Image 1 (cartoon, rainbow, N blue to C red):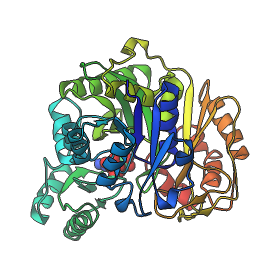
Image 2 (cartoon, rainbow, N blue to C red; image 1 turned 120 degrees about the vertical axis):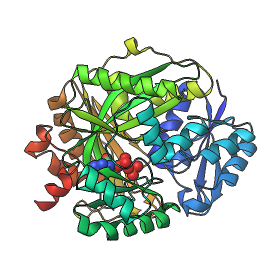
Image 3 (cartoon, rainbow, N blue to C red; image 1 turned 180 degrees about the horizontal axis):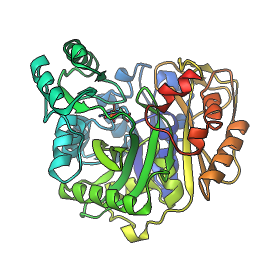
Length: 446
Ligand code: ADP
């Protein structure tokens, strides 16, 4: 097992990883930008190293600075969290060249899954169902037109290098197509420095269902069930829950095993999530995230399985600690992403948190780097806390969520807490009857 780990991230996820390290008796090193000098992840670590100015490019994405921080601190491994360098294959290669372990999959798997076209082809080759669309890159309008005529409108144009819900253009009819292809390519080029796009059928009322897997370096792999992440706004997840109201045990086994079989064939190791759209009882592969996800705690709550500890164990070459038969699902869990944003307009609301009081009590977990007096910098993601609630069933979980949201106090900045309180009053949410377009089609119009 490692003796010292460097956490190449900030905010709640850095705190989450620090906690796992402490549970395992591992020494910790935090890195921080000058904007984060008073951050919780800096205070909690055994050592911390400043890696640059506020802009991510010059700090949390600055590979030479992070490698230098490993060398001065003597850290043997890096946990990248999510975002930043977590899906950067060249970072993994550079760490390995310096004899530093990366807590995550091999660089080849990051490369394959990070290119959405290649990921889709790989998924199809190994038996996962995919969304009908172009079989690879779409070069121009003519190319696009013939594919769109084949699969029928509406279609979605997606950037092969896309991520974070960006780089997607929906096209409703042929009249919009030429203009949309140009726009999608130019946006992809600007955002991701790569103008490769592809086309998929645009599903009208799907649920977003994803499967958590974890595998070791000896060919063992398990799945930990699904998460329903259909509560989204502009393709960004807001609330996640497990189990999904629409997935029964048989379907869970089916998609879990199918996912594990496919990933075993490519010898994947580490934690990962395969994201599917689910419509009319059919799954369609969308993409794979080769890292820990924001919403991993809901899975931990219902399986009693610590994903971060297991990631660390696997990276240090231990075998998976559990077999598929050891994994049981108990109760229900829901996570709300609390963002420093206006709850009506979703405009960012950084600034000083005058008072922060997290809810507690049975079945309530808050993963956050926030405390009274901290200043939320404007440079990074606006998520400041995750409220994760557990209940014996969905109803008791929702009741607890309501109680926890009421107890949650954040003063000085605006947060999305009131938005979740509004959602809890909606019949469609209470019935589990919502899809990926529900927030935009319904919540934003009431
Ligand atoms: P990203 O990597 O940017 O998160 P994804 O491919 O995971 O991109 O897609 C993000 C979201 O976009 C999905 O959760 C879904 O809401 C929507 N989406 C993507 N592809 C389709 C599609 N073919 N039809 C309908 N919605 C889609």
